[in-house]
Image 1 (cartoon, rainbow, N blue to C red):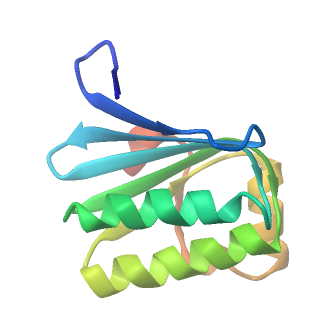
Image 2 (cartoon, rainbow, N blue to C red):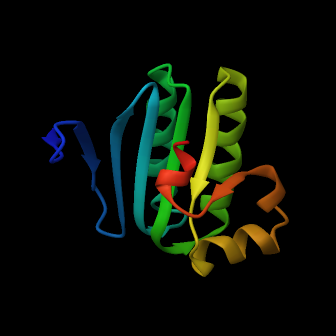
Length: 127
């Protein structure tokens, strides 16, 4: 486990070079899951594991930072729906922090944008 400059712990999961997932405690019951690379059929299980792991820590808010995602396939969309439902069941606010077309376009085409609380930045999502 690594630590950021402010001393908070960061967990990395990079078992596949196509995706990177880092989870960090943002304080006050808030967790940020930073995702980069391709979220597809092969890598979406890693995203699911990271987000469900973050939810298991009894947070009040989980933010998925998705601006570094370069591809979001249908398997990734399915994981986002699954973790949204898990967050709702746990009473946890789930927010997406993203302005990138590579994420917002697939969400929009699938008609999923209204299902999510999408913010421009992680900072906005943590408020």
